[in-house]
Length: 598
Image (tube, rainbow, N blue to C red):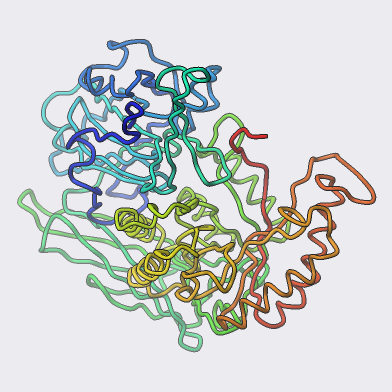
């Protein structure tokens, strides 16, 4: 939200910020179809308008959500999912900061609007960064933060009478403040000889383009009015017996029965249970192993949950199936263990962006990426620098690609971004992220931030609190953040389980001098390990190259320089992995969009 130079940050009254952070209630199960559940994807062309008014608030002042968007002015066709930035030919839209408006009119199946025993839920997979949603002009939900889903029960709205159509309006603001994740600031350019009146730009401290829009599917799904709201699964191994601990939350009734069964990949029932919580024992269990670590990696069982309840309108049933991988994760002073065996993160960092679609989800691109990862021999990646789409993690589960799941805590550089306001939002983001991703066997570690200014005084309390909260939410996984601060100045490092360090020797300094890499990298590892006695991952390293540019002897940006730099790193990594280094993640898997700069 924007206003004039007197104050870069305006509030939009109680409509937006009055209630503080919108705490999400309940579970966040991926919307799967079953015998009791249907889903209707709303992907495709939506009506779209950016609010180019000076204060970016014309849409609220004129209440664009009260009538079809076309009635208040011209609209564009906007594909969903996609970022809005690169789709059109308007240069202003590509770098737009402020409110944009999406609208879609849909027709619901007749039974959805007539069956009062059915619950209809609207789910938005990701909206960057603050979203307000209306259905038929009625406000239903708000959400702060991109990359994670949110939803609203819209049953009463769609079942309130005969409806020929249902109009969904979503207003999204991509403005970043010192207290958002990621943080940012608005810079007002006030020199009238250089800039027009009211001119401003968004300033960020991260090195990727701030794509915005509806990046993942928007959909409607149904459940019965008494339904399975959440499932939490943790696994363990006792000799050759796999242990599957489950906890199930039901909403809508206190009088219900739960039956649980676990099926193997052939569909054979291997264990049964009943009740809202319990433990299933699987003799001779097939464990979930990472890619290339076992001849049959990524083995997935299916946990089938059946709910039956007695209600005023009669018996109700709900069904949900959750993929389950049986595996353990542990950390020692010098090793990262999966199923009790040392695991080495041999992989990459990624970004969720591509030409034209920006950060919009795309199945063909995703499958191509996974084929490339396996072709490379990679067994892991980090979701730099935000949670990726749920479908990405589902493929990781299926293919055995291990994930360090990272929050959008990138670019935390200002003192204000370590304030209690920022911390409260960050805690909420971790809750949402863990609620969504907790059941994925591929996710083996949480990363709460990337390259924060962790030498600043408030960083110690900030990360101590944040990591403790993350561990309380999920005691089953180690927690880290990714640092580029010196080992003797980092105030957050004492609280992590694994040291993740980024360094770019002979790239961001000592330009062109690859002969210093081995000494500097070995010194880096020795200093960190001596200080903390924890396993270390080289979480970023590498050099850029222009494809097809060759120079020998190597010069920066040539393919030969990139290759030579990686080789120098690998000499040291191959030595230190025998001691306490447990992984290496190259920056970056593929090209990604950045801001324009010199």
